[in-house]
Length: 514
Image (tube, rainbow, N blue to C red; front, side):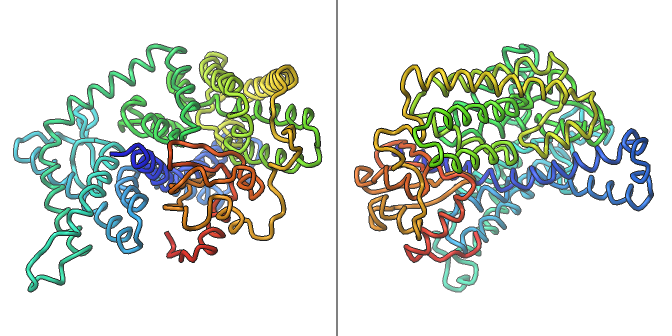
C-alpha cells in the first residue's frame, strides 16, 4: 500500500472516531453538570436544587449523559463504516451493516459460551470478563470490539458489493447484500473471539497496569505521545485506545466493571466520587494547563509581531478556541513549523503537567475545555483540586509567555506577523475563500480528494508543487502539513466546515448530509 494511501486511511479513521467522540463530549458535560448540581452539598447552599422537579430534571440529564458511555462499542461499530465509506448509499448500508455485524459477532460469542457451559451468573460476570451487550451475554470486548467490528465490516464492504449473484436474486445484489453476508461472516468471527480475546485481554490489562504502576513516568510519556501525534492528525487514535479499551485500565465500580479511562471516570462521576490517583494520571489533565500556556504563547507572539493589529484578531480567536472549545491546533500550528524546538517544549510541558498534577491533589479528570473544567472540577467541589489547577494555569501562562518571547526575539523566529514580507501570509477578507483556496491548491483539477476533520482540511493532490502556500494562508489556512508527495493537511481551525463547503460548492460537489 502506498504511503499516501496509508496516510489517507488513518486520517479518515481519525475522522470516523470523531463521530462518537463528539457525542461523548456533550454527554460528558451533561453527566458532569447533572451529577454536580444534584449533589447534596450544592443543595445546602442552593436549597432550590433540592426541589423535586429540579432534582428530577437533573437526574434525567444524568441519564442522558450516560447514554453514549453505555453504548460506546456499538457507536464505534456504526461510526467507522460511516466515516470510511465515501458514497452516500455506501455510508447508509455500511453503518447499518456495522450494527448488524456488531450484534452478529456477539451472538456468535454467546453461542460458543452457551454451548460450552461457560456463561456465568450475573454477579460473576465482571470477574470472568463477561457482560451484557444489547441484551446478549458475551465477552466484554468493550470499545475494542466495536472498533474491530467496524473495521472488518468496512474491509468486507467493497468485496461483498462486487459479488455476482444469480439474476433471480438480483434484489439482494449490491449494497443490499452487505448486511446479509455481514450477519453470517461476523457471527463466525464471534465464534473465534473466545479463543483470541482472553490472551489479548490479559495483554491489554498488563499495559494498563504498567502505565498505572509506573506512576509519573507512565503519565508523562502518555501525554507526550498524545501531543507529538498532533501534526499528523493521529492524536485521536492515541487517546481513544486509552479512553475506551483495557489499555487505559479497568475498575469495578458499584459492582460493575469498566474498561478505559473515560468509561471509569464517568462511572466515578455518576457515583459523585473522587477519582483515584492512578486514573487521574491517565486523564490528560495536562491539556488544561497547556491551553492556558498557549494563551501566554499567543500574547508573546502578539507583542513580538511587527504589525500587531494585523494579527490581533487571529490570536484572540485562537485563544478563545483553545480555552473555551479545547481545540489547540490553531495556535500550535502558528509555531510548530517555525520552531520545532518550541513544540518539543510544549509537548514536554504537557507531559510534565500530566505527571505532577495528581500528586498535587488535582483529580478533576477529563477537563479539555472551560465547560468541562466547571462541570468536572468546580461543580464537584474543592476535593477535585480545581483551585490548585488554577494556580498551575497561571504559572503555565507566565512560563509560556517568557519562553516564547525569549525564543522569538533571541532567534528571530518568523512567527505570525513577523514574516519578511510583512503580513502577507495572514488570512484576508477574500470574498470567496473557498474559490481562493481551491485556486491556491493548483485548481480543482489538481485536487484528487478533499475531506476534513474538526480543525483541518485533508487533501490528496496530483502535484503538490502546484500549491501556493502564501495564497493558502491568505485564504484562511493557518499552516500546511505535507505528509508525503501527494498528501497534505491545511490547518483552518473551527471554521473548517464552512471552508470545506465553500470549496465543494465552487467545485460543484453536492452535500448529501454526511
